[in-house]
Length: 257
Image 1 (cartoon, helix red, strand yellow):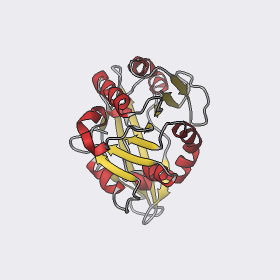
Image 2 (image 1 turned 30 degrees about the vertical axis):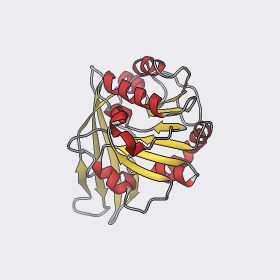
Image 3 (image 1 turned 90 degrees about the horizontal axis):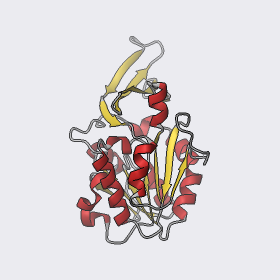
Image 4 (image 1 turned 120 degrees about the vertical axis):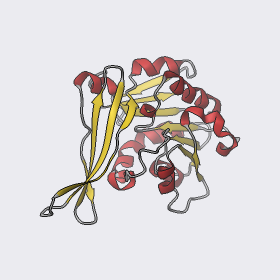
C-alpha cells in the first residue's frame, strides 16, 4: 500500500482477521498457482503484517514481502524471520525504484491480495505495478491478483463488508469496514475497530477509526493493462476456483502469465 501519513498505523490487522481460517481457504488455489512457477521464489506485494509471506516461507518458498506502510512492516518484523523470508519497504507501483533490495534473481511467482490494488489511484500506477512485475518475474511465472469485485459494490451500492469479531482484552474486538462508493470510481473506506464489553458503560467504544480513499478497480479497467504485459489471463470469482460473474461475485481473482 502507498501512504504518506500511514492511515493503518492504528489498525490491528493481525488481531482483527482470522488468519489461519483465511489462509486455509485460500491455500489450494495459491498452492496450485505458485507451485506452477519455474522457481520457488515469490514476491508478496502489499504484504501488510506478513501473514501470507510467513505461511509461504513455511511451505518452502523463498519470499520477499513489499509494503509501504511502516506500521504494517513493523508488525511483520515483530517475530524473528526465517532465512527464506525478507520484508522490504517500497511502493508496489514502483518496483524498479526498490532496486537491489529485491535481489537480482527473477521471481517464480507473485501475489497481490486484499486491498492492495485499490490503493493505486491512477491507471499509471496500476500500469507501473504490472510493468514492474513483468520485469521481476521469470518467463511463464504466474501472478495472482485478488481484490473485491467492485462491479458488484458499485452496482449494488454496497456500504459495508462483513463484521469480524475477535477476542479482546476485556471483551470482543469488532472490525467494522464501512464504504462510500463514488460515481467517479473512488471509494471512501472507513476501517474502524470497536470494543464490545457486555455490561460495560458504555458497552461499545471506538478504539480507532480512519478514512482512506481507494480506487474501485473494475475488471474492464484492469484487463487491458494486464494484457499489455501478460498473454494469458484466468479470472475467478472466489478462491474455490468458481467462475467470476460481473456484479455478482464477491471477489475478483486474476491469474496472469
